[in-house]
Amino acid sequence: MRWATYFAVLASVLSVGLALGVSMPLVSFRLESWGYGGFAIGVMAAMPAIGVLVGASVASKLAARVGTPALMRLCLWAGALSIGLLALLPSYPIWLVLRLLIGVVLTVIFILGESWINQLVVEQWRGRLVALYGCAYALSQLSGPLLLGLVGSKEDYGFWIGVALLTLAPLLLLGRDGAPVTEAYRVTFKNLLTFCRGLPAIAWGVALFAAFEAMVLTLLPVYSLRQGFSAEIALAMVSTVVVGDALLQLPIGALADRLSRRALFTGCAVLLMLSSLAVPLLLHTLLIWPLWVIFGASAGGLFTLSLILIGERFRDDALVRANAHVAQLWGIGCLIGPLAAGAGSQWISGHALPLFMAAGAFGLVILVLRQGAFGVEHTAT
Picture 1: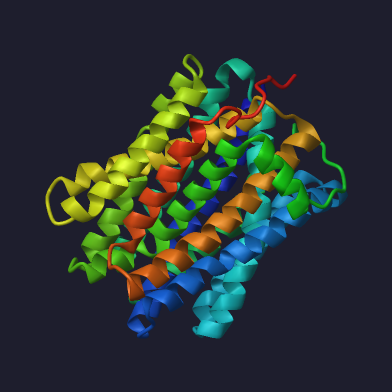
Picture 2: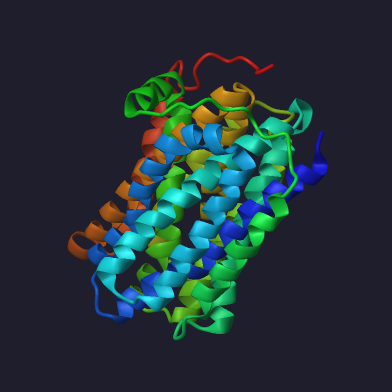
């Protein structure tokens, strides 16, 4: 196994997580200070989701023409440019366009990076090494809000930190090999429908985690502010959720190499449902802090286990296509989640965010109990 390449790809993707973690909450805080309501903030949060759908459809085709390492480097630099323009052009309509572009380029990075990692790892270490990716990515996102809390949300430092990270990250990929071989293939929604029919539990789990991540980084700070907490406490709550996501991914990955991955997946869905329902009840008590940890860990476990289950089934071009479908589902989750929670919080209930997650997790629990929820089990060779 190419360990140096594994860690180089891992580090480049982590730079994206840190850049998003430090810039996405800053966007929401700015919009809140400009007087925008929950729905307008939700629309802004959902814009990258449209970009995700575009990026997912062209990633395989572009990678076949340019090459995976070169395309990842180009997209990282394009992401740096887009975040820099957020600081230079503080306008809601312009930010909508920039967030759309960010969604496109970062989606290509995630598709290729996750495919590259799943291609590199050996089967007996798959659970732990994919979980290490999930854990490290979550920690990078955790560091973003913490770093934003240190530098402050009044100035544009958060944006410029993201620019620096995405400018330097491509250098890590120079000279790396072992990337999956792809064909010039455009992924369509018809292909996505076939994927969802074949692996419905994985498809729902990915979309649910995407909605979770988009809402945690963009709407949870606003949700906390409107429940009477300060900006510092709101950021601490976001960080605690991401800590929960990060802390248990390695244990989950280790268990996935020894126990039933389907049973672990089901357990995470049940925990997410119960913890989401408990948030409104425990929000103003000390118990909210360990609850945030469980909330984040159960949601993160769904995504980590989804990647593990996909990696054991596919290789090369099929693996890139599967991860493109993951990105499409991610875009759908990121689009629906913030819009629904933003609209619900403005017009239905102030606790729409956790209640939306509870409903989604309940649907997943019902789905995993059905026969064929995880498709036909087989191992990639």
